[in-house]
Amino acid sequence: MMLKADVIDYMGKMDGGVLVLLSVNCQGSFSEGTIFYTEENLAITVSEEVEKILGCEIEQWEGYAEFATSILLKLIPCSQLIEGLEEVDFSKYISFDGKTTFVEGEIDPDDIEEAE
Image (cartoon, rainbow, N blue to C red; front, side, top):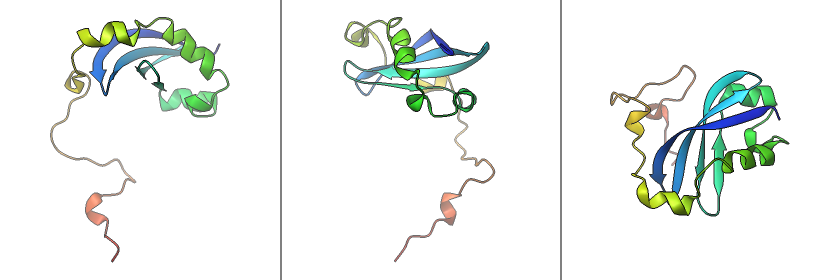
């Protein structure tokens, strides 16, 4: 398998599920990813660099099912964990100074005009 992941932090609960920070190893290069899971569903994110190496979005990758299973086997079941977790506190992971900034090439919302 091209990808391996390890659990770094159970970030907390949100929307009836658990959000987990992952360390993703892709061909010896490490980056962060996440898995959000409930009793019925899951969603995995990886960096854009990983998706470039795969040549597609993670969900479209032929090894996705095996990769997802390898992560799920490392996780505590949602039903056993969710009651003891606090809501996700994103301020631990990102900082926001209250100002909106734009990456070059993005659209400024003030430039959007409503159609009549």
